[in-house]
Image (cartoon, rainbow, N blue to C red; front, side, top):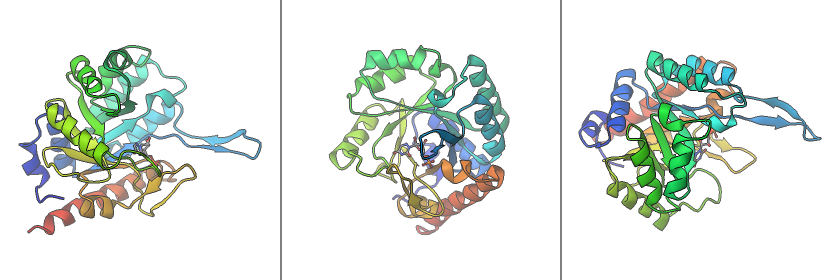
Length: 272
Ligand code: UP6
């Protein structure tokens, strides 16, 4: 954890998207990212009882509901059943209207050549509409080179740590992610991590955040916003089901925005 404010970090971030994000965060006083995640509830004979955010209508309505409270909407385009180019156009429209960035959580992990095709091709054309994309470092720097070459306007986040039980992104692996980021600082502006991993020239984005803590039945582990931001030094909290499953998403997003921003202010105060 370091003592610098978001205003001070503005001059340290080399990537344009990273700086644009900081400006949005400061203007909206929001360090909340909402994950448009799906959850499926099966009954005892494995038939789907209930599912959510798997249609474009749901995705767009969430973007509209939580838009005013967030700095980022994090998408999983490949869980949407009826994806067409017009969905991304509408998302971009909502992002402009409510001033948030779109982060496609594709978690690229292949060799550069394949990643380049996944980023630009297929039916999703991610490079055309995403402001932020992310990558695992498992395949080496080629992944990052491909992303930065074929999506110059996209900012990249590297997965340095994960929130799920038993994950392998620890110790040396985390350090390696930091080294890779430092080597590609024009393209990479931050990490998916559990908190600050040491370098204030990058921004830290933490998933697995819920006010009540706890977990799910598939290994997700939740930490509350105050611990993640004020103590572990993360900058942006990524909240999925904590908001998506709420009966009033607008209100939940507003509650989370305030909790996350207060935690950031609390972190700053500790250094005054
Ligand atoms: N995510 C994690 N943990 C990681 C990386 N990514 O949970 O280490 C993503 C998930 C989901 C969101 O893919 O989109 O963050 C968390 O959603 P939740 O709050 O509903 O658990």
